[in-house]
Amino acid sequence: MSFLRLNGIHTFIEQFHILQGVTIDVPEGSIVALLGRNGAGKTTTLKTILGLHPARDGSVTYEGADITHRRSFDIAAMGIGYVPEHRAIFADLSVAENLRIAERRKGDFAAKADFIFGLFPDLERLIDLPGTNLSGGQQQMLAVARAMVPDNRLLLIDEPSEGLAPVLIEQMIEAIRELSSHTTVLLVEQNFIVASHLASQYVIIEEGQSVKCGAMADLVDDRDTIDRYLGTG
Ligand SMILES: Nc1ncnc2c1ncn2[C@@H]1O[C@H](COP(=O)(O)OP(=O)(O)O)[C@@H](O)[C@H]1O
Ligand SMILES: [Mg+2]
Image (cartoon, rainbow, N blue to C red):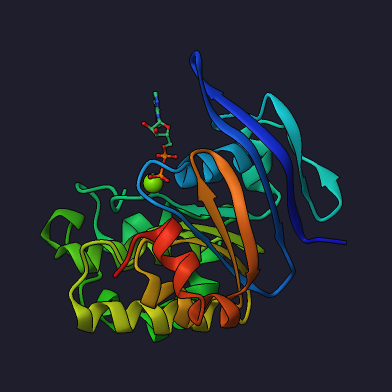
């Protein structure tokens, strides 16, 4: 049984038929990379899992439960965390406040603080600063850290390396690798190097359809597939 499985998902946003057959298997304890060009449907796939753009057809099962038509609130409460694109943190709140409001239960933050600050030492140093004073990279770290505060068993992470300087990309890779020892991860990445360092499995989406999946170790050597679907040189 899969930990998370999307089976033949079709999703509409308003009248637009965005996802047209997406099937993904995420085994427990793994990192699966969701790859594909800009506009392919990666973010929509994550939002479909979360019930933000519910599937019109197909199913999402999580730990054996059909969550296709559950409300986002209930889906999150089942232990699915989300790190959206573009560093969605609260600019007016301090680092500590950003982390504390992510609690699902009282004491979540205190229980995780050591682990989180071990992964992101910068955040501990900046704990009292408002989000707006953080660099782009630090905001991205905070966005990932925030999803680690509650007891999530699955994290959906959307483009964590986007816009980061190389040294911060390395730190982000290390942090995601570390957190994946506790949490299963579905990772959207445009940066193939990052995805290939982290994920054991991949799924490629093209124009709203999952077109290829398999072991990352095989994809790394598959120039044709990379050129055809990911367009990197
Ligand atoms: N709110 C929306 N209204 C209409 N079309 C949208 C909306 N959001 C996304 N889309 C379209 O859905 C497709 C997939 O988008 P998205 O899932 O964001 O792609 P990706 O994350 O792979 O870049 C794109 O063609 C995009 O233009
Ligand atoms: Mg996207």
